[in-house]
Length: 439
Image 1: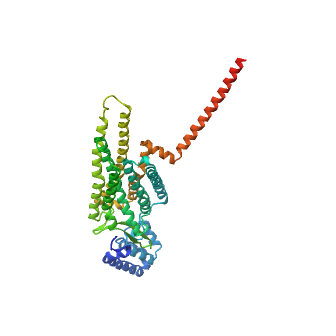
Image 2 (image 1 turned 120 degrees about the horizontal axis):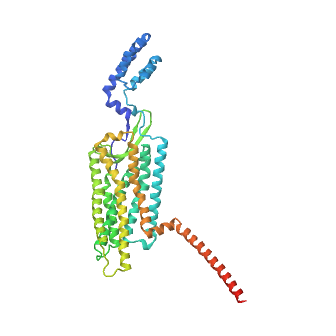
């Protein structure tokens, strides 16, 4: 597991080794400048322009104001230090990709709300299906599997990966880096394969209503196959996920959690052909093929349900059966479309960064990737909302958990008691009037 390559990289040492010849030349040039300054200190103002021209060959970032300031307050050791250090890129001394605190706060709030809704919503869905016998249908078993995958994605990957992307630092160790990457690919694959299995089950139920329905044993076998296939597809994460620590010149460190393939770095850094091939295979297997299959099945189902006619005279039970099938199909289509919309930008990002790797170093790219990642992870919180809105049974159990039914019952009880009191008073008044009339 992992890679047998250097885990810690001293950027300053690495740069000096790679630029040894240029560094030696620039250092000797700085020595010459320093010697000229010492030998001509009495006439420094007259020779400053020639000295500054020499320095400009190395340190091209000097502004005119900075040059005048150096000429007026000359400190030869400071000038030599600037000349010497200008041969080293400034990003080696500073850790990049640290967002301002207010931007970090905004992204933290967005991710916190999304993750809390995903975890709580999917836990309620799992409880509804597991704890209630009437909810353990074949379709709901697939929905249970989908809820488990979404729960693992939100709790085991999204939370920790967001902290990593926000701070550009992975503080959770190499072992959890491997686990997190594996869980991410595993749950995404499981989700899409489960949604595909749901569409095929609905297709058989609608297109071939006389065939025997899928049994729970067959459903459990399909779910086991889904997890097995997803594990095989996610195997590279177990083999190549690792951490690399970069040391900067100011003694700070930055640890990255990423895939290091045999031919270079992965995770969209654009240096690994194997990573690019894997991303394409993952895209085709977990997105393109399932979306094409589901588009075909649901289109065919829609044509069948729209053209359905009741045999003989129209009856209530037959109409209810057709409407029930339509409601289930509408719910599953909504789940499919949400998955397609949420994950499409994520796949496009990694393909684009492979062919245009320079965009990774742009100032805005961290916000772009956080937005794309938030959209992809938010798919795990939408499914419970869809169940609540589009399924009356799920809605009833959700209301039980959130105590909404109790409030409605209390309100109805209060209204009933008030109406009963009014009826009692009315009956008393009526009886009094009748007794008076008799007298």
